[in-house]
Amino acid sequence: MSAALPLLALLEQEPAHGYTLKQRYDDRFSRTRPLAFGQVYAALSRFETKGWAEVAEVEVVDGPERKRYRITEDGVEAITEWVYTPQQPTEFAMSNLYTRVSVALTSGRSAAEVLDRQRVQHLARMRELTQERKTATPAAQLAITYELAHLDADLRWIEEAGTRLEDLR
Image (cartoon, rainbow, N blue to C red; front, side, top):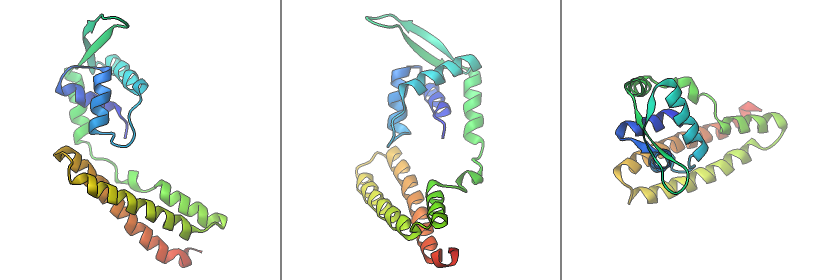
């Protein structure tokens, strides 16, 4: 997922500086991989160019000036269109795991070992998430539940692929 439109959506809530947007993005959308500051400022520049955001005010303090951005009406329309446009189901058709298993099969490496190692990682992550969910905020619980569902689907695929390894050779 591109970080740009979720960043723009955060501006819809209230005007903010790039630093604040990055913190909010990381808290809400990027639980395991923080967004780089460069991505935030590049996105803000694109938003200005497209007319989706504008500088609301510039603060001059000790150091570089700080710009506070706000979303425009065109930006709100862009968010509305993005939110309501369904994701293409084909985006889920290929995964890194599938690719690694396929390479193992075609190269003479052990696909069973790839599946076994991935299963261990998935189960460990599911245990972490299950613990984390106990004290998570409602918004974080949504993210955790989403990740758990995908891990569960991967585990079901791992099991199915494991039973079909003989047929795949």
